[in-house]
Structures are given as structure tokens and as C-alpha cells.
Amino acid sequence: MNFEDKVFLIDLDGTMYRGEEPIAGAKEFVEQLQNKGIPYLFVTNNAMRNPAHAAANLNQITGLSVTAEHFYTSVETLKYILEADKPAGHIPSDGSGIAYVIGTNYVHDAVTDAGFSITTDVDNNEIAIVVVGLDQSVTYQQLMDASIAVQNGARFYLTNPDVQFPSVRGYVPGAGALGKVITAATRVEPIVCGKPNALIIEGALAKLGANKAQAVFLGDNLMTDISAAVNAGIDSIMIETGVHNRTDFKIYGVEPTMVVEDYETLLSTWQ
Image 1: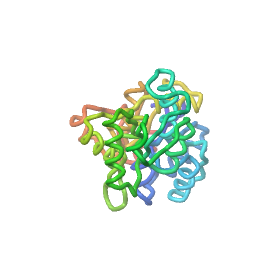
Image 2: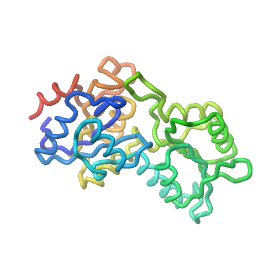
Image 3: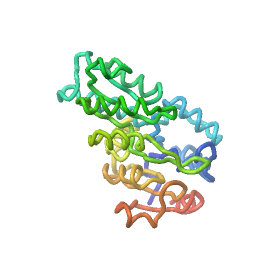
């Protein structure tokens, strides 16, 4: 694969770092892209940080120097889907919609920017949408309220389906785990905004002004990163520094264009 003809879409958790620990060689790989003038974006399902905070976090962990303009998140795809669902008649388009939200301020801001008011009272309001993202202080009451709102007819959106993500202590529950709790209670599957939805790839490429033939996705997770690339019809590289490795191909029925053990191997294949 001739990398210099490509634009790179790069995952964060499990690809650039694990928890607060940088992954060996990740910084050097991105610096190679920077030095050669190869366009790149970090495309992340992480809905806890807005692009500015995500850039600051990545810079602090890895020692890189990147800006918010180098990020595209599942929350940006959420905003796109909400806007698309209004003219389709799925949700109110006149500013009267009420939302119940689990997630950080970044997710709350995206929902209000889309024209919804947010409530914590599901019993005395007609909830149009329930939006769930990762919130590390989530309570049982919130999960119960979200489930009741969905059962009462609210449209259910999930920022991303990651049931786990790597930390320095081991794998911990992600937004997808919260979504599965609500689905278990309601038997309603969410509308997934992040990877593996191809829309997040299409949005990232639009931001770069690139086409699918130019794109390659670098990530560690078969079910999100690599599946998103497959769904969008672009090349992919799976790096075995996070959730999955090549022994998982047959289990999940998904394969990347290329698989590498680590960044040393990836850099050695540079053409």
C-alpha cells in the first residue's frame, strides 16, 4: 500500500493510547504523516470530549502537537443524523422536541444545538428522543428513566456501540454497554451514530475534502474501526495494540485490508 497517496483516519483508544499511557510508536507514526504532509484526522467514537479537549488530551499523553481541527467525533455524526431525521418526520422539526440525555456536556450541547430542550423529568414530559453516550458517573435512575422514555415512544440514539475500551487497569465498560442495558429493558435497538456507521467515515472525508479511494482507516477494533471502513468501502489497517488481534477474524467475520502487530511493523512497511 502506497501510504503517501492516502489520507489517514485514525482511531484513538487502543490505537494511540490505552488509558493515560501512550502506545509505543504512535507519536512517531503521526509525526511521519506530518513531516510528509499526508492529511489525517482522528476519528473517534469517544463522545466524552469535544475536539479541543480531545486534542489537549492526546497532546498531553503522547507529546504530539495537534489541534481540534484534526478530530472528527461520533457526536458530530449524531448532529448530522438528528438534522436528517427532522425532515423525515421521525422527530420534531419546530423546536418543540424534548430530549432525555445521558452523556457529558459535549453530548448535551450537541442535542441543544440541534434544537431540543433537555429534561430530567420523563414522567411529566413527552420525550421525543433519548440520547445515550458514555457517562462515567451514570446512575441506575438515569438508565431506568431512559428506558421508560424509550418504552413510551422516544426515538433512541446511541453515540457509539463500544461495549468496552482499554484502560491501564484493563477493559472497562463503554457507551455500548449502557445502550445494551436500555435495549435489554426495552427490546428497542438504538440508532448508532459512531463507528461502524459509515456516516462517520463519510463526514470525516468531507471534512478533509478527500474521496474514499484515497482513504485508509487505522484502528484496533474489528467491530467499530474496521467494520466502519468495510461499511464505507475504504481500505483499513488493524493494529494489534488494543481490543482485537488477527485470531478474531474468523470469530467476527470481519477482516482489514492489512494487519500489523505494532507501529514498528507498520512503519517498516511504508512505501
